[in-house]
Length: 175
Ligand SMILES: Nc1nc2c(ncn2[C@@H]2O[C@H](COP(=O)(O)OP(=O)(O)OP(=O)(O)O)[C@@H](O)[C@H]2O)c(=O)[nH]1
Ligand SMILES: [Mg+2]
Image 1 (cartoon, rainbow, N blue to C red):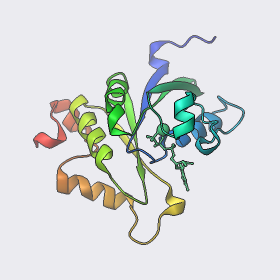
Image 2: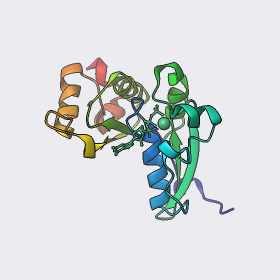
Image 3: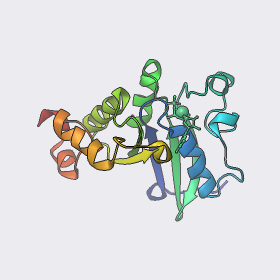
Image 4: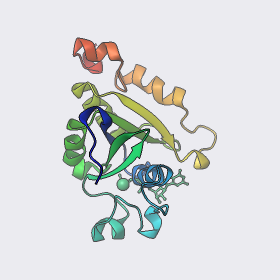
């Protein structure tokens, strides 16, 4: 197995509300990066990171699970996390060891309860976030756009925070 030095390893947590598409996105990212030869599908029980019997049967991630791919000579450890509130402790644990979080938002529903909870957690940890609007093929009319998701941050004072927040060590909420 190839050995990577620390500057060439990144831990990235996929976080967000249940059903936003984190596990499907993880499978797609692994396929795109040639880490796997077949595109896994949640609905067919072949998603790379939902391998547990219960996860396959329920079509929900029940615990954080890692998978990795090499991208531009860097090993990306993807950590797929549960979006269900009952298993949120696993999501928090994954965020604690991550260098960054990918916040997956269902474009049909916009930011939901767990979206806000992961934004709070990311802010508390000073974790850089990328927001991915997913399920755009299902979005109609009043559906989420990046502007609407970002606007929610202004209203609730939550959401992805800036580098200056991190430097000051303050959470977005404390402003
Ligand atoms: N139409 C459509 N369906 C999608 C898309 N991405 C994911 N899905 C479907 O949405 C459902 C939920 O996807 P998951 O990847 O399991 O969602 P999740 O965020 O991992 O959910 P939890 O594990 O419960 O947190 C599955 O049926 C997917 O096939 C998309 O871009 N478009
Ligand atoms: Mg999942």
